[in-house]
Amino acid sequence: MKLKITTTLLLVSYLTACGGTTPELASLQTPQGQQGQNTETPEVPVSPNIDSVDMKSRVDDSSNKLGMGANGALAFDIDKTRGEFVIMLPMPQGVVFTPSGTFNKYPDITFTPMFDGTGKMKMAVRVPIKYILKGITTVPAGRLPNGDLLPAMPAGQNELPSLALSFPSQNNTKINLYIGLSAVGLFMTLPDKAALPLPINITVPIKNSDKSRTFGYLTYVNAKNGHQPGLFISTVVPPEFARILEDHFGL
Picture 1 (tube, rainbow, N blue to C red):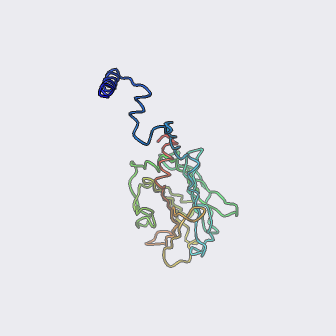
Picture 2: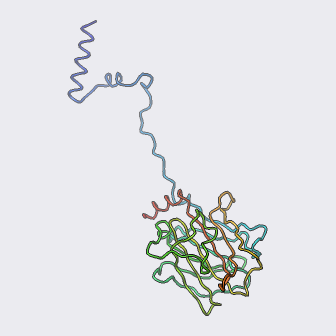
Picture 3: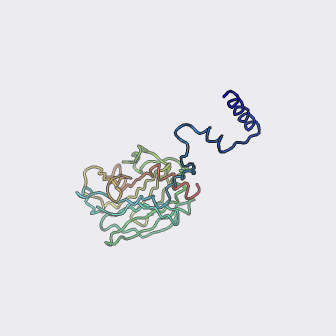
């Protein structure tokens, strides 16, 4: 019996030194209870793809707090082909805004009026995803034109880099676009005749299709200190969506 044990130990030592083994010795090295188990390589989980990103969200104002009839209006979406975040700001009845173009120094950020299926007008701004996921650091931070902090900005961001445009021939309309890290906001002034009959600023949420998540907010901002009233819309990109978008677009 001693001879058999000695021979086995010598054989193990020899094979270890040579860097080899045999099926029999391999089975000896398998922990008890695991011998004969399936040793196939486990499948690597597949990362979520771009199709799983759904930020299509609509104004949730079923009680018509804003008095605009904007309940259910599509406010945000992602153009996955062009790699752009689309912000759609609903306009009150009777407001007409016709110019379209780009923001100064950022020709790839575009704006244009659009109409939904009911004929109601919206101001649509297309922002490349790279600016929202990475932010714009070369633009000074700003507030609303009246000096107030940005209202109902998700994640508590009340002052963000701001790009501004003015249209004197369009009822002195002003557009301010705010872009932060995974956050974006859009403010547009309204002519005094289009002011909503609201005594205070009113905010309603913007939610996904099944209303299980709130992505942003739509706020009516009253006239103040000689500044025109306006509408402010905001949203954030959830971290889990941001990671997928970064991978998909190579950011």
